[in-house]
Length: 171
Image (cartoon, rainbow, N blue to C red):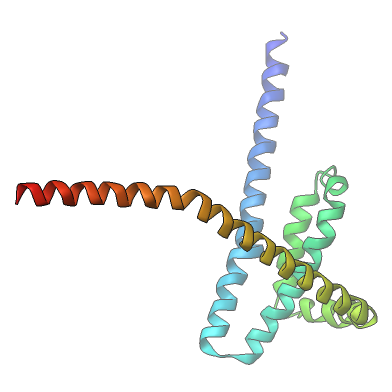
């Protein structure tokens, strides 16, 4: 009597996991793979209208992804989050409605224009810090390489010298 409800429970979980995997796969395919290929085609054909369309899509997608990083922990509690996210990504791509352009022109562009000076300053500071970090890291890598490779190269040179000495004795 108790086995059947338990079995139904696990079957329902299996359906939910299967549904989630299907939605995740579709989201990745429709939200990323298809736009990547469409962007590639627009670049290769040198079609500026298509390039701009996909550039606007990627701006909207990137903005959504950044917002999702902060909201994901809360949004995933809603059972329809992933299907709605999938629908949103399809909605962004619809050529007939040009939603990515509307989202960019109505929200993203005005926001970025208001924050442009601060964003440029933050970007310049971040690039400078990364350049410093890269220089320090490269110097440390060079030091480590010198420390680790020098004994190895000396050992190799000694082996080569030994082999040459053996070769001279044999020949």
